[in-house]
Image (tube, rainbow, N blue to C red):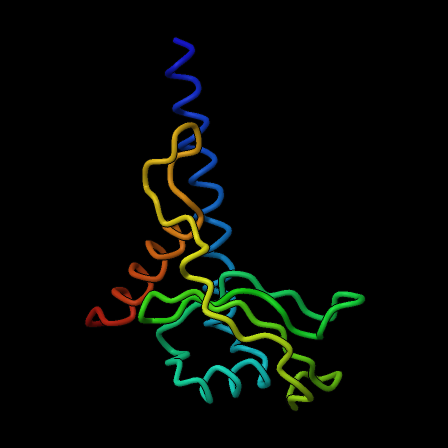
Length: 136
């Protein structure tokens, strides 16, 4: 019975993580990315309509005004730090723009934890893009 409880907890944790990734992705797809992030991504050839924001922190003390993690339509994870004006519509500097795909946990079979966060993000990306392509 103990293994069953542990398995259920792993599934619940994966569900919670997946829900958080989906909520962030849907929020930023609905409201639109901050202009400075959108411009920077487009300058790097990213299709923002088919990519998702996995994490985005805004105006965190001691950090550039925008920082976080994107998942591109091509399945690449991009870590970024962008300093902007207070309304986030003008880029002052790009402190970091780095492909960190190789550093992500893409496994769907982690002992004790189930799916890696990056694997869940890829799943969410695929589902959202498939839904966007589905006929109305």
